[in-house]
Image 1 (cartoon, rainbow, N blue to C red):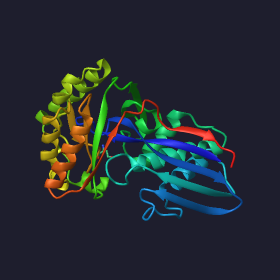
Image 2: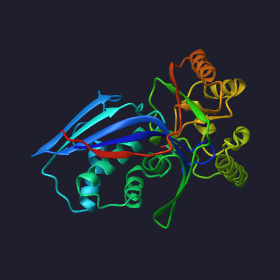
Image 3: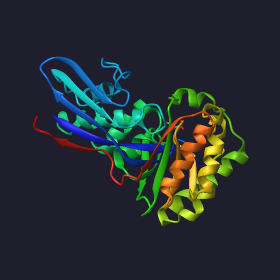
Image 4: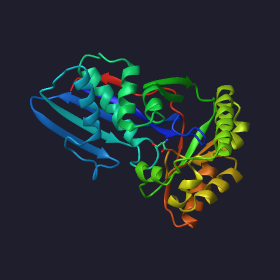
Length: 301
Ligand code: HSE
């Protein structure tokens, strides 16, 4: 049996819409083995009540794309999912499912595909690379499609930097969160984001968190999504007041994520309390960046 641990991810990091992401130390486990016939899907943990157990399951779909690519036909498949990553909250649950399915299926079928090929398949399913790249590769990733191929670079997260996530008790689909975005933006806003994203990448490479308060600002997506996350602007402001270096919407939301090097518990409390004052119950967690991405091992069952 193949067992894959896949990290949660936070995408965008503010200005890096669809291109920046970071892996977090919170993991889903995907287990896969070939059986004599049929498909058996077992799900534990987050989303167990809602995630489909038939061929529409996203882990199965990802696995199927690998089998198709390498012309391997398993006689049947057993998939067991143990989920810690909250579903549809902006912490990369679908990226984890896709990457877990791809890696498990690749190992099951003789490890014929490279990481670059798996990334290409993952982006084909997910549509953008900013969650799947760090889920696969770990650390902080810059990734972008160039003539149909994903070009990426990895940054080691600054020492001592941790995140605080405030995860609201409601789901927000990425599809809906993308529908509220404009199809065109002004040159001013584009320039604003290019400057911030470049500053952010440099600050992260140099481990200088003092720049994050400006470098994590965004004008391409976050404000448009504020109406989908009650209390968002107040929670962001409150986290900054108690020492968060940068605080943003995680991916398409609704989770908010603060980056800091101290005061983690205080930031968590303030984010949870401010959400509650705005009618939203939120679960808070202090999560370290995961310097490594998904890992696979063969387990004797
Ligand atoms: N970059 C994407 C978005 C991440 O913000 O819509 C969501 O998966």
